[in-house]
Each structure stands twice: as C-alpha cells, then as structure tokens.
Amino acid sequence: MSPSIPFVGGAERPASADGPGAHGSDRGLRVRMVVATALVIALPFAFVYAFVFLINAVGLPLLEWANERPYTGEVYVDPVLLAVVVLGGLAAQYRYGPRTVLRSVGARRVSPDEYPELHAAVTRLAAQADLPAPDVAVKHTDLPNAFAVGTPNDGTVVVTTGLLDRLDDAELDAVLAHELSHLANRDASLMTVAWVLPTVTYYVAIAAFYVLYGLYNLLRFGGGGGGDRDGRALAVGLVVITVSALLTLTVSAMFWFGSVLIHRVLSRYRE
Image 1: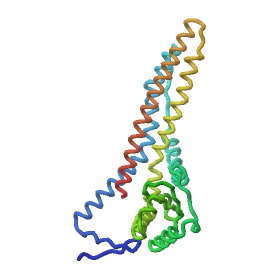
Image 2: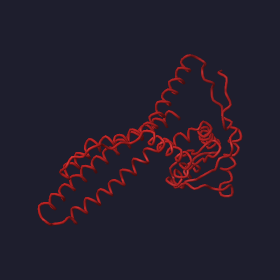
Image 3: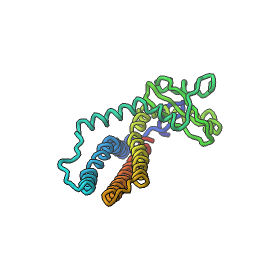
Image 4: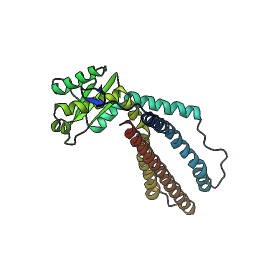
C-alpha cells in the first residue's frame, strides 16, 4: 500500500510517485501556467495596439477621404504610460475584483447566525490548513457550485444552496477544502486578475456599439438637406461610423474570445 499524505479536511490522498514522470509533469504544468499568465498580462497591450494600428491604417485614411485633405502624423501610445495603466488596472482588479465577482453572480456574504454549520466547517478546515478563516457567501440557486475569491488573508468561499442541499457533511468538507486550497495557493487571486481583459473588452464593445449606433442615427435622421455638400457629408459620416463600428466590435470580439479561452485554460490548469 502506498503511503498517504494528510490533506485539508481530514481526507487522505496517495503520495505521488517520486519519479521522473511526475517531476516532468509538474514542470510541464508550471511552464503552461507561466505561459498562460504571461498571455493574460500581454493581451491588454495587444488589444490597445491593435486599435492603434487600425486607427493609423484605416481611421486616418477615412478622415482624409472625408475631409478631402491629407493628415500628417499618426496616433501613438507611449508604452510606459500604457504599462502603468494596465498594471494599475490589474492591481485594482486584484484589490476590488472579489466584490465585483460576488455582485455579478448574486452571492451574498452570510453571518454565522444564518449558516452556523457552514461557517463552522469553513473555520475548522481553514484552521487545519493554517489559513485565516475566510468569509462565507451563499448564492441561492439550484445549481450545485462552489468557488473562492480573494487572497489567503482576505478571501471568501462561495457556495450555492443547491450544493448545500445535495452534499452530506463529508462531501461538503471535501469541496470546501478544495476551495480553501485555491485561496492558499493564490489561485483565486490569479483567476480574478485574469478576468480583467474579458471584462474590459466586453464593456468596450458594448459602449462602442451604443455610441456609434447613436451617431449613426443622428447623422441618418438628423442630417441636413442643404444640397450636395450636406449629402456628401452625411454619406461620409455614415461610412466612417459604420466602418469604425465594425472594426471596434470585431477587434473587441476577437480579444474577448481569446482572453476567455486563456482564462478557461488557466482555470483548467489550476484545477
């Protein structure tokens, strides 16, 4: 019988073989995690510079055509300033992201008076893992699910009422121990930060759609009727806005899908 290693929650798991295959697998996992994390950080830069490229390659020629005069120069984004903005955004997401996640999924932090047994289990398992007891939040839904957000010292374990209804005490301990391990390894923090770009690209696309759609309708229904010049200005405005909308939504969608894919790959590696 292989030796056992105590695991959080009192359960036991077999010790992994101390062979080349196991170490190789661990190294491979670490490499994949590093690559995925690097892509999470790099994608915001690629997102911004993709727009800069499109503005210079398509936007400025459109303006030249619309105004019938050439433009000199081009749009430039200082990489140092962009790094400050991106890293500041990641830091803000690290700090305030857990609250946003809880609000977005409709989970509510609960007190020990409301869920005494759940709080007692989380506190006991956290003590066994040498962690500060995290907050506990509950989402009312029939879907069984659990996840953790935050840092080891300021975390929250979220469970659904569907999970609480389906699991016995031992099964619930195993699930809670798994989520506490994510807090201990800072997986929850990493996944929260990794969700920055999907969130940003989603809202950029939505905002761009409404702004450009409003301008489109303004030009279409509120354009002047004062002759050929007004007619050309209206046509030019509609073309510029249509092209801008298509490019903005296309780029945002591409980066949204790419960042969601990386987020899910990262989540799978962490599990």
